[in-house]
Length: 494
Image (tube, rainbow, N blue to C red; front, side, top):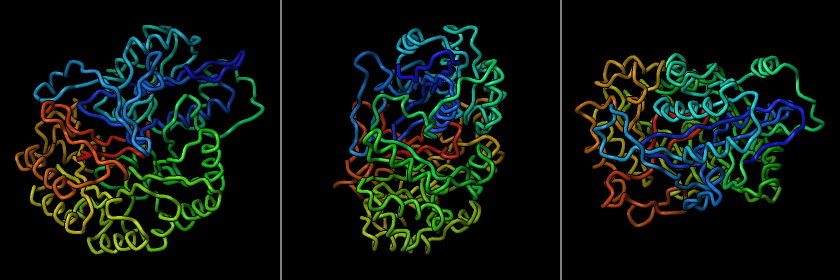
């Protein structure tokens, strides 16, 4: 167990619960929101301990677990098949718990001082079985310690989170200064003041790092109808450039890490006053950093100047959010980009020195009322430009602008059973968009890049083994915590 030891001060335990799903993959996934809360508590003088149930390498048994790690730090998660929930019983794949075993979890709990408060985060709404199991074990081991549940699931459907998870309290929305004051009041007295504070997230909660995450802003000025960013973090705020640059340098120096993933939902918004000054500040420090954008960046905001700066700064993983080439669908999704702007952005990136194989383009599939021909046309348009489409199957998110339409279009009980939000069901695809038809498109994409296409910019991905049809290929699921970095769908990394 990795924690900060301090005498005579309240002890707070941070928990990232298990993922329970048919597929999951560590694509620069860390519970950044939970780690930011941990950093705030540490700097306030509390004793902080972290257990990340998803991370078997750091929190597994004595030898831990280390799956194959890609050159940029991504990798597979340890998985254990568990019983499928009845409503998912028809899916011909293994349903798994990703991360450490319940026994390992209990061993960790037995090895730490009794906490005065436990903070549990949550991510996808349909991962709630892992949240429920985590809280059950916590309450069994520390029956008198209050458990607070926050994060995405808790924010979007708090009543379900309360009834199913049974925490002592559900925290809706982002963790704020008022919550820190409530914790101080709950625990009786403020902890001893720290002589030094870092302002960094609680990265010391992990023993081993292969990458780190950073965010330059919170929230998003856009309100895409499929996205919950504005619900999870109302408004849009930006971090000071000087402190961001200082933090990145400190993290590199502390952990020797070159790979940083941006968790921003709107990385290029106000780039001239935020991202570009940040990259300029880092320039010339000789750090040879590599940057990644798993959440996707806004195509319309890419200029030749920005493309040049991204290339010069060491961006190696670019994900562009095109979504569709249908003009009508583009309009309904907020008119954020046109096909002509996509062509201009690609030209800027290629002229800046990016290979077309460095670029992956997100396309939405399975939206309510969407036709297969629309998805097929979008895939064809992206392939014709020599870059790789990435089909992102739509997952309905409660209370987003598209939610009511999704509930009406789906044969599944979206409003009462969050397990049906899982995109593996194609819950709003109907007869038009089926797994078989999407698999045909994915095979076409694989064939177009069959010679060599890097999953994360350097390694050709493995195709699903024929003898294990349930294994599939891992979907990109950002494992953020109560974060605007949450994506409304999970991507199949062909």
